[in-house]
Length: 148
Image (cartoon, rainbow, N blue to C red):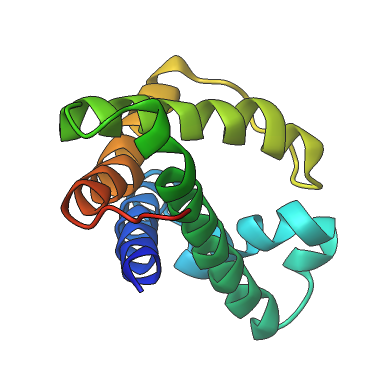
């Protein structure tokens, strides 16, 4: 239950930050962001489908957030014992998530590649530290799971 709640919190924080960033920079409708997420799995047809593609993007987003949360609970407590500071773990994990997503998963997906921007990379890393790393590190410290 802790992983599910933490994943939903992390997914909501990440989605909120991504949505604010996307809408403020692109001036596009929020549904386009969710179509981009869907396009990672389905390619260009995500942009020609109906509202189901938007909903699928939201589902994919939360599934990914839950996966990163479960991975944190399974691996990080073993790598970084209880004495490690929450903020340190959040920074390390947020950076790890960014590296794997941007250098491994997205290049292997069907999503159209985006040009690299150092500023956007720093902003996105910061978002992942706050939205994914911090909730995972804090929850795992408060509610350590045994037997995983």
